[in-house]
Image 1: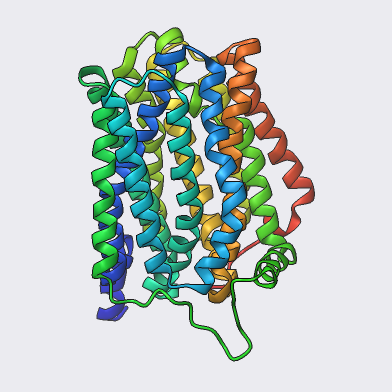
Image 2: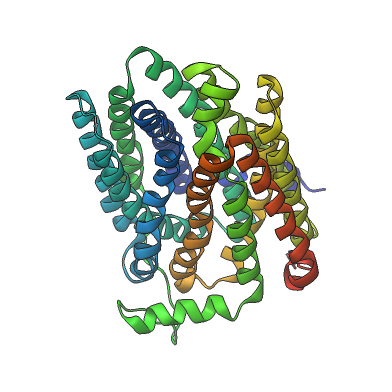
Length: 416
């Protein structure tokens, strides 16, 4: 092996960080995503303390998903028409202002939950424009050979934020309440805004001679048509939606912490962080491995593990076992997510990536958010443990159906 190959092998776990603009975005997201995860945990705890209602907790998912459904498709078109970096500057600013308003209202003694829902919806709408721009920008920051590594490192940052964010939120909630958490999140958006301002890469998609994009219904239809006629994309999106719809237990964690495991706000923070602990380990392993064989089969197997671990968590009454199962849920979800995102981005032309990502958002974010509503409603009827366990069973049924019918996914293997 040559010296250059040796150097590449030694740095393979973090090869994407050799590229300056990706490194800037990655560092900014470490701060911003931690703040966002702190706020997500604080909102769930805040609403449960105000209402003690499982249905009110589940409604948070509905409030988040509706703006995504209504805004994400136009967000994808905007990401393919306008400068993706500048679009992210606007969306990050909107999210900063939303979190700041939530902090101010909470500090003033607000006892109603509707402002929480409203500002959560505003932030979700901004996310519907931000995610297509960010995911479409990512392949422009690194060469194709380093893209799987960039996806893995991005997910490691996200999962690290899910460890630190809820844990920090739990400590702050127990001592100071949610207002300070919301204020910290507002300040955290400055990290991404600064990183975007320092980037040198143009955020505009390069297009070939016959590749055009405009802010029009035809542009939207072009993106939808591409997704629909690409079976591997349709199958990964559908399986993702069904699995997360049935097996989403996040919204019910306050119920498990307070009423089943009896561990309070700090225990809630630890439970909310547990999926990310397993996810970070899995993400680092995936970053080290880079391209793997039989990606389609591995996706299906990882979702089966996700469903089985969800069932075990729902039935557990032991704190350490619940933590372990949530960690396994996070690890399995990360393996699936890295492979799904890599497949979709690399089979999609650059000028269509924003629109493809916007369609995916409806599935990727709609599944767990609607799943939270479903879990909350079902928990109100049959209790939280059975609600989570039956969701895991639904996930396993989806896996069985995909083995029978999603042949493109089952047999998929990258040619790189």
